[in-house]
Length: 331
Length: 269
Image 1 (cartoon, chains in turn orange, green):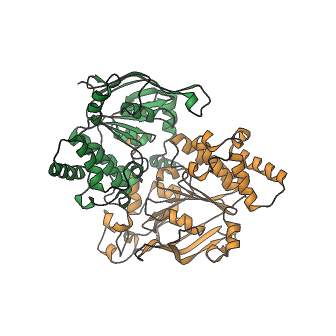
Image 2 (cartoon, rainbow over the protein chains, first blue to last red):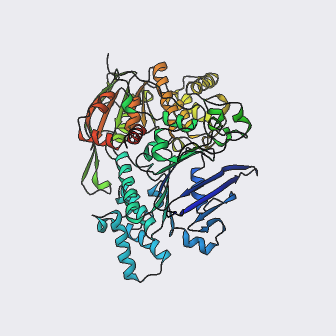
Image 3 (cartoon, rainbow over the protein chains, first blue to last red):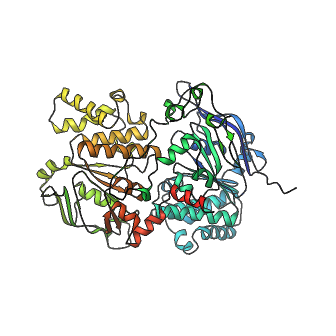
């Protein structure tokens, strides 16, 4: 018998709903289950309203007041985060699991030097002598700025570029040696060359520190060559999941297929200068346009059948790693 | 055919003392020249800080250039007096990245749309209403949403509204500064298609500023690659991808993530 790896994170049947002012509940996540292995990069792909940011917040129990986890479990390193007490939770947040947001200029304190901002994260979680704290801060910053740690440490956020600010956030997130980083659109505000640079930083951290990562994005192209596995969310449900290479190269769910088709492919442009339209998905994915019954993608789906309006498809395994929730694959 | 817009040797320098910069002077635009023909699209691509947005501000007469000429149908916008420029301004409209920030949150859709129509002073109240409903239809929105506030619209609907408002004064040139960048992929495709439709039906001319080279190549006839305030490469969109000349263009191409590449990678294990 081979060694069986235990999952770092196991999310089981997660349901999250939001109450509006009128008291009406809106189901943001429905029956989301997945596992994450140590050192694995999981790309969560979804558009506005898909529930991807709700997922990030739920895993650390950081939902806003009107949000509620109604069902499910989140096992992290053997502990159920949803059952953890507040002291235990503080020990996990920022220390074992870190969160990185989209806009680094909003996440950093504008009038505090970068080094100090990293030091404060360490000081908040570990009580260390001053000297040790200083040395550790230097080491952490040097991991993401091998050549210019000193200069960055003494800089204020406004003196840094977007990419450098994002690196400071990454330094904060790895300061306490977490085993999981959740990054919610961490590169969305950066230009493409900086975007690639930051993805490179994440990959090298994974190799050096064996970090697992949940990388949330709306851009499928970013996950190519970066994520190990891809999980596609639509209307708060997993519609497709599998090895990144497989899902990106041969998507099976009608939504994933349509989404990938709507992304421009510059190399396939006709040579005669003619411009062609993109095959866009009609309609939108706003909560108000989701059907109350059946498959959430049914109103926009090109392959819809009568059955799709009656009940919801379950996630069906269709290959070694790939699973799809669509009646086309039900036998 | 005469170009709609002719930019000659445009220079914009910012005084370093007023910035928190290390140098005395910052050249945001350093001798930019290009022509833009009616009913065509020029995509301006480049990294942050390459001068793309400064170019947009200068063309829209929101920043005075330090030197150079901007010819719009034979008139040099830089040399015009304020009264003359006021008459020309409606012909160039600007659309920004985030419609949530560029639309008045306290107004409803109809108020946002009718303001530029009222300012023109060309229509009576009935005419304004008719024109507003026609504009909404042109961008794929219906009068049903007329009383909603921007916060009650989706990102795509908001950007459609921003386009409708930009069309209201009857412009000849639309400058789109990262107008698709904040949207979801599937919504980007919808809005890109809308822009192409409007180009066909209204003969609209676009200056499409973006850091997304893939979308730039898709939507534009010509691409201008900017680097440190200069245009370092300018040519037909399909040529830029197949035979890039400048190092910056090659870097941007290399950094453009694509699903097509992923497909190839997966097929070649």
